[in-house]
Length: 471
Ligand SMILES: Nc1nc2c(ncn2[C@@H]2O[C@H](COP(=O)(O)OP(=O)(O)OP(=O)(O)O)[C@@H](O)[C@H]2O)c(=O)[nH]1
Image 1 (tube, rainbow, N blue to C red):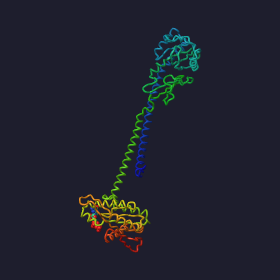
Image 2 (image 1 turned 90 degrees about the vertical axis):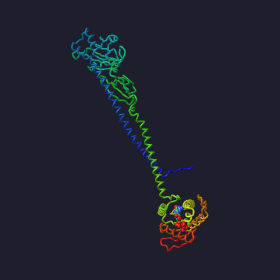
Image 3 (image 1 turned 60 degrees about the horizontal axis):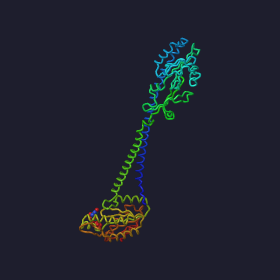
Image 4 (image 1 turned 180 degrees about the vertical axis):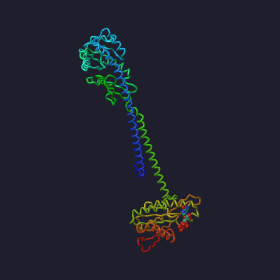
């Protein structure tokens, strides 16, 4: 199984793209979260306002009714008694004046003697409060506190539920005369103010939170008090109610579209990250291509002279005390090839020779086209003897090589080369000197008849004078 190891620049591009994706994603995410919270707060504010408005309508409507009996109480207190003839009419007037009034009761000495309207409320006549456990505590409390108190909603003697307002009457401000009660139809009252279990996308629940009420739910779904709800309290004389409100589709409904935005955000951040990665890869590849173009000879695909010098300089810095050899290779009578078969044949010959040199020498050193029909080979860590051996092999290899040519005039071409060898410790010699020495040696090889090598030996810091060998 083959493993493809990513290059450092690939890893760098990937990391930068990931960082860009993460930063953008997190920033957008935070912006969306802040917007979500803002929308949720707005919704809470809106629900709070609507709940408060509902509660104040309820309070206003209750207050408009529960003190109706106060007028009758004042009448009794003023006259010190009640005139039986006028009671039905008085109660009828009060009944008309009120809203949602189910019935009015007059109970001198806590026994109900009069009720209006009488139809449907007959069962109430004669009820003695102290004998009615469901009513006596609230009656007694109103007497004790000497003020109008509201209780309920309660199950009524005559059936159904009602909110009861009780006003105790005292004669001479001392002697308790009796109780005036006003029963309101709770359902009618709630629907008149628009309080229902669900109103315009908001669920409401009302409960009684007065002590001893057992937090009884008056209207709506009890679970609203288990939820994250807006809660407002209504204080009435003698009782406390609590109204809870929650949007039907929850608090996050106002920002539900932002949930999609979160996905879009990450997709967008990923897309931008991918774009960054593509751009960086494109830039890296373009840089590599440019570098390759700048370093490579277009005809032979070998290093050009500039790249060769750069590589050699780098190696010289890396291994300053190493012993180096260098070959300068020049094709013999190449002008003749060009002149006889044309420049194109010459180019093909140069390409074939470059391929051969690459195949033979790449593992041993750095091969470059030095100019025209001249090639250079740098052999770091190689002695003169090793360089000479290599040069002999090369000479034989090229001499015996038949170069295939695509031309009407010729199909096979044979060439020879001449090689100049220079050798020495790089820190003493220096690259320029090594090249110059190899060039001199090449000149001598040409001079000695070509198809051979010549070397410069004993190049050192303090050379005694180079000696020349022609192989
Ligand atoms: N086809 C081709 N020819 C080239 C290229 N570069 C240089 N030459 C030719 O190489 C020849 C070099 O000729 P000379 O310097 O006289 O050397 P030579 O004929 O090889 O003779 P010696 O080197 O003395 O053996 C010239 O004809 C150049 O035009 C190239 O890229 N393509």
